[in-house]
Amino acid sequence: MKKFSELGVDTLILNAIQEMGYESPTPIQEQTIPVYLETQRDILGLAQTGTGKTAAFGIPLIQLVEPQSRAVQALVICPTRELCLQISKDLYAYSKYKPGMNIVSVYGGSSIEKQISEIKRGAQIVVATPGRLMDLMGRNAVRINEVSYVVLDEADEMLNMGFEEDVEYILSHTPEQKRVCLFSATMPREIRNIANRYMNSPVEISVGKSNSGNANITHQYATVHAKDKYAALKRYIDFNSDSIYAIIFCKTKNETQEISDKLIKDGYNADCLHGDLSQGQREKVMNRFRHHAIKILLATDVAARGIDVTALTHVIHFQLPDEIENYTHRSGRTGRAGKTGVSFTLLNMREGGRLKDIERLSNIKFERIMIPSAQQVRDKKLLAFTDTIINTEIEETIFDKEVERAIEALMMLDHKELVQKILSLELRRFSVDFVNDPDLNASGNDRSSGKEGSSSRGYKGNRVFVSLGKKDGFDIRSFKDWVAELSGISWKNLHVDVSGVYSFVDAAPEHADKIITSLNGGEFNGRPVRAELSGDKPRGGGGGRGGYRGGEDRGGFGGDRGGDRGERSSDRGNSRGFRSGGSSERSSGGKRPYGKREMEGSGSRRRR
Image 1 (cartoon, rainbow, N blue to C red):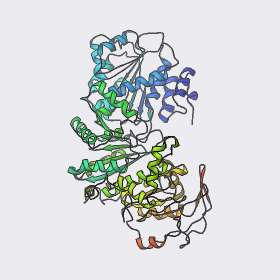
Image 2: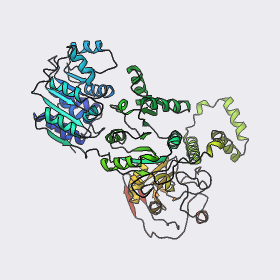
Image 3: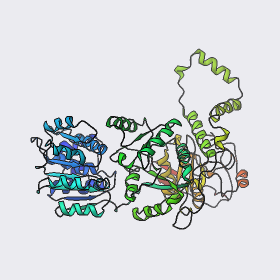
């Protein structure tokens, strides 16, 4: 992999981007930057959201424009004010050590007088939305007849939003001799028309296939009745609440506001973004979301364009988009920078055909999961509660005499009674009505593409208990990778929950036995590893601590479907929760490297 220094980037810019944490270029950057710097060719780039397009054109622009001139030399046109602000922010960062650079962003919803004043002071680069730029052109407040570089970012989205005529009008007022760089996630006929009309034999750079999805994203769907969509959304959020950081996409501004209001009223850490908000309101919401003060953001497709937030765990489609290409734009907001992400669709019974179209045109495969039951949600939250207690650091300084007296009173209780009282306080949050809430999954053949549930896994599969967790240095991603490495099963076919001293792996029935065979009986950093189908009672792992798992046959995603409960009961061995003996079908295990971790030893395979 090349370094930025090998692409011809100036030292001053290298210093700036190194401070930003940039080390090696992404594929679109590696291919685009040398062409931009070393040739005079136009560039037609096909790349998905989140691939690093801004740096691909932004770094060369900063290097090529002349700070000594106050005239507008470069024009970047993008569809939304959020993207406009983000691009401007990045360009400022790249130009940190290049004195005299002035970058002005112009967009609707903000003071046009202030923007005119900033341009008059001199701006080498103007980043603009089409409507506001045309307004400024009409007022003779900005001159683009001398620009040398024009960048069209998210060109397909500008066309989807009805800006085709505006873009062509703007381009017609630029000099004939200029360099044009066009980036698009998809390449419809209209984009080709613009390229043919305003670009001169462009170099075509493609990262991934047209409309294709990010390989780091797992695409899931659950089928529910329309009337149950909101309840199913809450159930899904509740089950993933320990890790979720998500954007939920809706079709309309009214729907976005309505669902956001409901979630806030129901106690969720949510807010919304749509076209009716003022610029100040939008910036306040986005600032809180970027700093994780908001965990769930409701948004329309238009409002979400240009949102650049790292570490999103989920993109949730409350409604599928009207345009199939928009599904790619939406889902591309997660799974960035090598991280994994989930794109989850709440599918109406009538939308199976549209899901099939997205699969066909986007070259992705959806897998059906089941909305977890209310009982499973309660059990998952209780697991998180016990995990919090186990991992809480004791602060000796807060234990004054009054606190010690309170502790003395608690110590009078029987150990089991004390634990039951603590858990009772948490369990009171879940009423009998909640636990007995109905199944929200719609039955029947929900897809026109053949076998119902043919690609399903996740909540419908088997759950495997593993006696390792966060105390062993794992998080969700590293644990999933570790299990995939040892079992030879793709991480895409696994769903994991990682607690303090134990974890769960949810997988299809045909994979569960392979996971158990691969992990059970080995050692990890000197600790014996236990892996077995999740039972109906908690069993400790490694350090002797047990883990709470709900009532009978309710252990997480799919409980113990497909397992033999009686045989599992007879396998419970010593008090530390490890099985000994059994029918050995694995005579040797050897040592399997995995980074700094290693799995070694042999173990007995569970009879099923």
